[in-house]
Length: 244
Image (tube, rainbow, N blue to C red):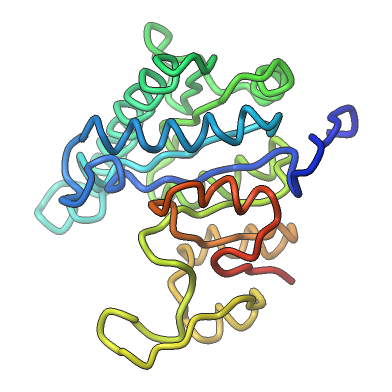
């Protein structure tokens, strides 16, 4: 990433945005709600227009979740592959919304499906970013038993992102569930070790360990507050920073 010049006035030049599948389903978290997808696309365009290189990893929980499928009798590996295919559907929906806003976008899949998406190739993904395109990674890691959180951590390190931005519906990480405990306290900053020791649900343990081992910072923030993605990229203290 040495050839990349950081845009002026922004703290980050290349980011990985992790979106949950449920977010595409709006308040209900199920299916694909066009208004929710358009809101995502508008926030992404806002930071792309600043010159920031944007990579997106999207989940598939709004359509199918492999783990819950296995609990209902579907073989775990099969369920996980079904979940990976769900992420491709979401990636295509987000690509459509971005391109309607005039944002050049490429979908790369960890599962080969040449008719709808490029196969993931790291150098090609980086080249797309250098040309100002938003790159959406679908298909998870391409392997069962790994979550899209792990895919986000893996891809962030592979393509030389400076930070993983985990989009959520809450404004950061709390010491307990703020919906159940009115006295829950929000962390402005926390170390990887603290998050692991306190079993805080930042990401699953595999994803989290990958970020910790490679010193990849994570910012957990409320994506649904207008312009919050831009505020994070500009360096405002939004959400919770997880770092070494």
